[in-house]
Image (cartoon, rainbow, N blue to C red; front, side):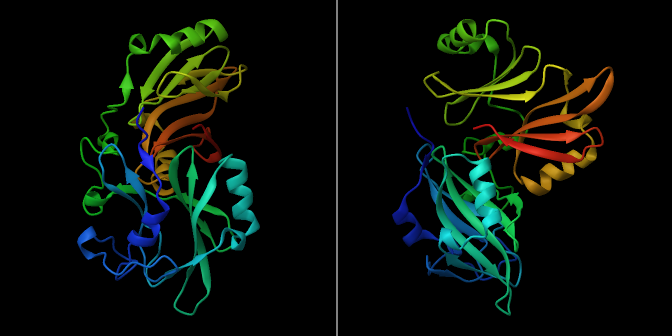
Length: 299
């Protein structure tokens, strides 16, 4: 089994990208003079290497214009940031942490790179330590332009849902797991990610997302909505504009895997959007107006 992400600590020391301005993302040809201890004017930070494409992976948009990032220890992060990470990303480890400072040296926010389930996740927080957004990741030669290419780690951003697979194509070990443990489930949709892991949506008096490893072994099961509600699939184009705006702002580069509306007694109650952001799956819940209510990290 191949693992997409190999986080290499030596990579941090040798390949963190130092750019001339936080206002613009640069290509690898402009990344000489890296330093891991104090980063001035950084907009792309190296976080690992894809074993599938053998290309370096970077988080982008880490720093605002006229600001700089200074490396800090995890213990120096605000309590609100640590609490958010603890509650949202169980089992994570901090790879890198930075304080963002303006030209006067005032802290304007924080950037944290964590390792979660063997994959890097870059997160942005405000000056008080409150979550702002998940940072987009790109392969090295995609730093400029649209940020992805067909066949790369993030090729599913083309909107064609290349990771969708037919339910009949699921490995027998997965269908056997449902038959043995959740025989009342009706399978709705399935995805096979770039790292060969699986995510299966099913219904049984509620909506569930069940994750499986590349060999088909069970990983986790997440309830997305209670059995007291009625669910219906929703196309991306039919989601309220407020939801699309929130996803674009908070999870740049995301891919919508599946969306549902849910109702109670015939009245619309809200929406669930399940997305892939850089290889990590999230379920975002919204009320009937499209206002965000909460997020659940699936895998």
